[in-house]
Length: 146
Image (cartoon, rainbow, N blue to C red; front, side):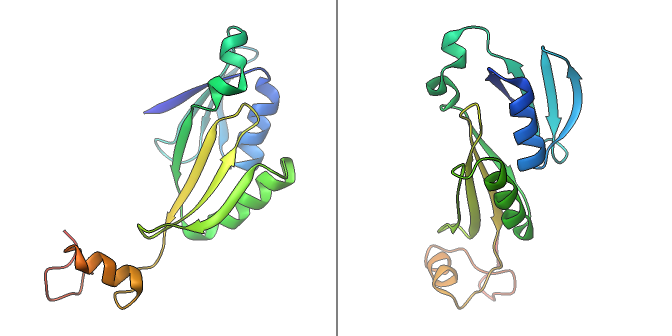
């Protein structure tokens, strides 16, 4: 599965996705398509916007991409994106479902969330909340995670 994102500026978008978000340029046809990859099955196709409607920020802003990563990558991705575009990143922030996330808005207006699992602590507020709905840690006598 992959996402296809129209852009007015393939070069600027490619630079942001590569230098900021850590993707590699897997395959390109100049002026026509850039196939980016981060990890296996984390692919993005950047394509030229076909018309003014495709190129409008409102069209790209409806694109949401969620990228799994490991916890120690969040700060470096956030820093790299902020270096390229200072106001492009929100976070990191913790979620109720045990992830730490950053939200990035790319030059073409796509919303990209990098999400990483946080360590599970059974005796934390989150651990108790999960146990209250029947989700237990792997070492819990009540059955562990299913």
